[in-house]
Image (cartoon, rainbow, N blue to C red):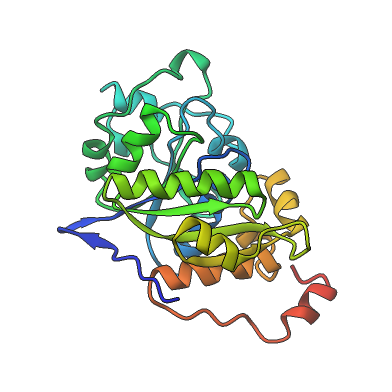
Length: 259
């Protein structure tokens, strides 16, 4: 299925939410790597860690010093542009604070803050259906739902789609992550039927994702020819209306250890 993310809405650059009702399905990993893949394709973007109760983006990317956080911006203590950090890979990030004392910050006015960036903003959502999740959904222009192929994860993805549609938000589709294609998983066509939304990308199980995360780098940067990286680049290309063709002899490259 062809999907295209219209980068601009009403003269402002779009806010794209990455969400799922269930934790542990790979929202943060997808958000980071989608941000890098779009950056690699020449699309300037900013990655926002919207999970203020359990911030993960800065941990995964190895930011040890965070002088200004999303919570500071929301509380009016800092300008949102001053909160941007640049990762060595080139990803631009607005991190959330790791402190539990700031975990209760409310995000009702987050849209007005993000509009000041006027850049494509990718938002890594927290799990569940809390008030902050609803606020982020309302602030987003379009949404991608991510799930693993297990029944419990798909059930929560179904809920995410229904909530998004009840808020009249456009769901671009469902991304199936960590797909092993064995008999203990739901298949993409089953997931489409259950979620009543198209599966726009399947990302295979790939051990290189864990290795890259351990090194505080996107897998799309560290292992650009890995199966997960190629799938994420295909998704990024679909979002901007381009066609991504993997390099020739990619299987041989992997065997030879060329990332």
